[in-house]
Length: 361
Image 1 (cartoon, rainbow, N blue to C red):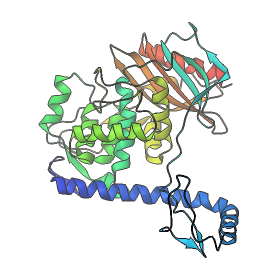
Image 2: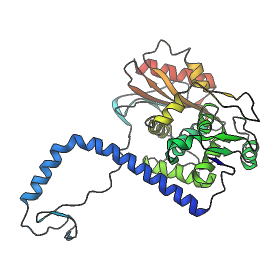
Image 3: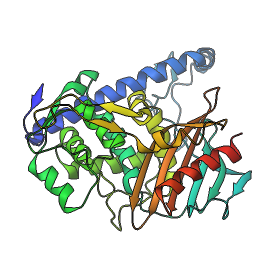
Image 4: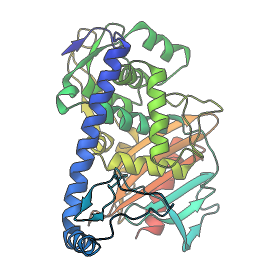
């Protein structure tokens, strides 16, 4: 399928597309919940027996004192309709063992979290609000992937518009180098958003999945709320440009990275060292996209028990050099590391190496 203009959709088409995506996400979530509920069958059976034993009571009142006669019953006993299950949130927490970092980590803000337990292993001013810069694109990737209706949508194509290239030029954004009227598969836009930190790819994804940049940002903030981050995190753009209202904490970013790593496609993109795009008229030999952080860190964390397997960097003057990485040990145990305001891009890498070495050995 080829869409010649990523924004050429009516409001009805956008609403229908959102409804299909929402339905698909609900079905995937319910399937996961059904698998989990199989483990609870003995407890559910006990609940039914208890309900039958209550027969003859006619009706009962809710905890608020209101009748609930209109809900389904087992025998004469009332059984409350279960609410739509909510996806469990990942909530990092400090413990008595959490290390408080000082000058041994030059980055002004840092957090290292056990991705399995949520325990904060080490932190440094981790709850201060920062500008996330291009780490923003981790959420861009996650939201875009969640909007895709099916795996086949990865082969849909988007035509790059003048508005996209102008936005990138005016705001001096990092880009893949896509040109006006270049036709690009959605799959390549995902990799371009992360590996090249391409604002052109991110904006094309936003317009493809939501109809406009503004509509996509609204979806990003809805996702922040769903993750329980909306008290400290709020985004105004999908590329990471500085804005007073575009902010989060390094702990917030770790939660966002955890959610992305829980999605197989996002994990695949964030873990790629390089990706080769298909040839186009504008790029006859294709392009080699590269994750700078992963390629540079592999020579420095080889001796660590935990090695970075996924990452995204960022930089704006207001936040310095920042980075978010996901590390794993030999058994596949995961760790989340986010730092901000390092004095150089190399220093950001070294800080991640040192944190994994000191607290995950």
